[in-house]
Image 1 (cartoon, rainbow, N blue to C red):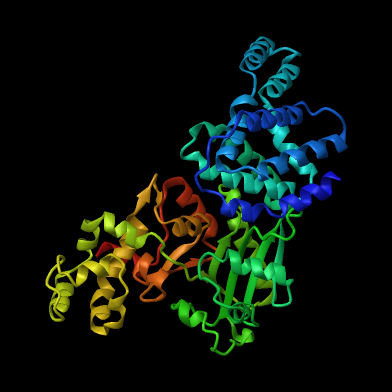
Image 2: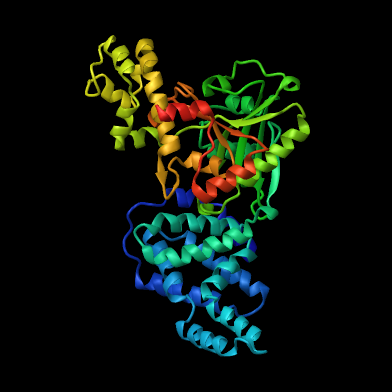
Length: 459
């Protein structure tokens, strides 16, 4: 009974979460009392397995029926009223300190751990017993992350839930699956829905991305078999790709995979907001790389064609960095086409991310070198907490890649021009350097980059 009821309710969770976010009135005392009673019943864990499923099912159904204000109250109640008991922790810690060095130490340590275990964990863990319960918790954390900025008191619950999800989604539990045009239609629809880098325009576009010279791999969790957690799209080529529009051209002939020497990872999309902070993207790339080398022994180059999502935004906040990228020769070329200095009304919209300038070939040629230098300065010099400021760069550099090449007008879509003046990056994964690069980047933030990229940044 509980399984069927909760299964039907949870199947609606994504639509409900996506539709949430509007203003809501404060929850009534009646609603709060009902929520508190259900939470207490779950925290007490009375009865057997059937009772646990029933309680968790009712609680999940209650949560899904709430509006945003009520969900915030629900989460605050778990965070503030079901944490560990400070008095029990203090007593257990005192007993542990007294037992250190004696035969009682290990029992005292176990009792201290038990005292620190909150009722929150008991409540959260019970959702494992119901159909789609893990997915429910992932989506619940997505809500939690939405509310955190305005409700800092939810941080303790978020940390506890993130730790629990990190354990449940350990890479050892994940299954790597290759997706093809023959995969279930419902799964292919989710690939279209979740694609976060280059929007899939049509079924024909998707079919092209799953063609004979392409590969698409995804990680799945056994408790979420119909939900890809993260997926990567790969093109098999004979050289580094330098233009995403050409790469995604539906009318281009399929490449001969027998001659392919290069695998281009051109899109990596994480699908579950509730798993933010749970890292498995690096394991996906390593598994895919091994899979490709097994199937295509001639492959010797593994690289990406990646966006620079924060470049234009960063440039707007660092005008001095942009100005330093323009040489005297650049200004002469620009003056020849009517742009006199950095305050030119023709130049300002370009630097702000406008699109019209791309059609002006003379202007595009004149801007190529200074904007590539700006991009190199952003990648190699932009820092936050000693880490590369660009999120895509942090991901690939943290996984041991090298910045191999910057590509001018590699993405002339509206999104590409808005984000980075159409500039894209090739990150290269050299198996012989990956471990060293990870260690140096993690320890000091040092970035491995090809000589050409370093020259651009120095100038």
